[in-house]
Length: 425
Image (cartoon, rainbow, N blue to C red; front, side, top):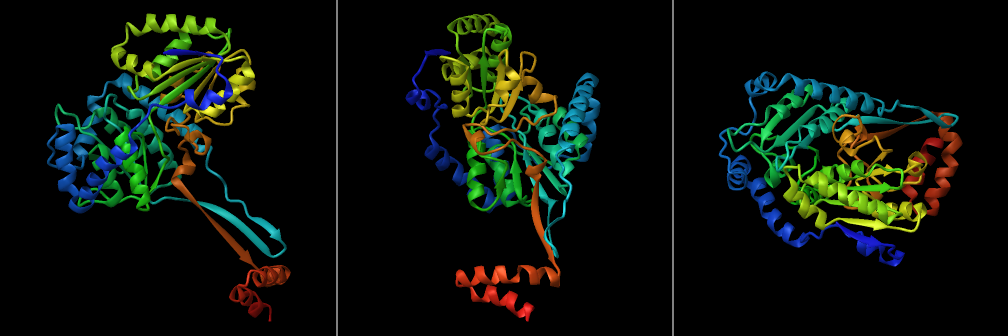
């Protein structure tokens, strides 16, 4: 991890660059797969699963027997952990449901807005280098709370026995997911976007993935399908001062660095001594981690930035717009209030990002790659659309009629004006 001392503001954008991805090269590889699955359905999905995942599958859909077996195969301690996390996540997300409120804007004119669940949603759960059954909780629970009628899940099968890991299947049935399919990568996104003989077409796709999956999601969005958010590799930023615990900070940076070699971690502080202490802890802790080779590559994309003061630290963090932000400073709560660009914020020395990744209650599906400037993380709102309504009485129309007539006439839309005039007469 390189150290950057007191960079001037005009250089901030350059030093905060994320790892570079060849976007056109990605598009050129992903587009033909999407088109193939759109044309050839199940056959193409199975062919790409054999090509990329090295797994030959007969049936794409997971059977009820496989789902039932998952509970039996999963250790009871892990089942209990998943159940506890699910309860916390459910408790937090249930409070996001909004009550319909009728507003009388003028006497005789009532307006209101109602949340309506998206009928069919698709959840993508990566296989890759980690078993992300926690993402099933993060996507399935708000989808169920929102009231989505059909919740479809796709995830790559394992190479060993062509099945889905019991933790994913147990979690899926726990949160009420409708159907599960053995498909990963671009072919899974295409199957949910366009539909196949087996996989139903959905109206919105959710879930993290590698650069190919994220590219596929953005390309199917061009075809008219909704997605949760544009995304890139995972990232964390830690703001630290002299009150931080260097071993905690190092552990937080390492926990994010093990996601993949295209991830990025950032340490922001106002004291070079903190960087030295954290770096020493990183060297000590990384030796015991099984993913240390991957972490070493990730740290090449990462930086420790030393700034003049806390004001500059806050300004730089808002410029970076991190997916995860940990604030390990003496005034962490007050600093958090000044953050306007971040996916999720972890306040104080005892709020590790890992807690939010799994079980504290907040969602871990968050905007990356600077998209926290304009996007929110996944919530119940992500699974609903909001329809507006109005009801106007005869008296109400008499009150507002002239206003509408004047505005319509000024815009040259006489038919709009006439729709009012004909009623007033």
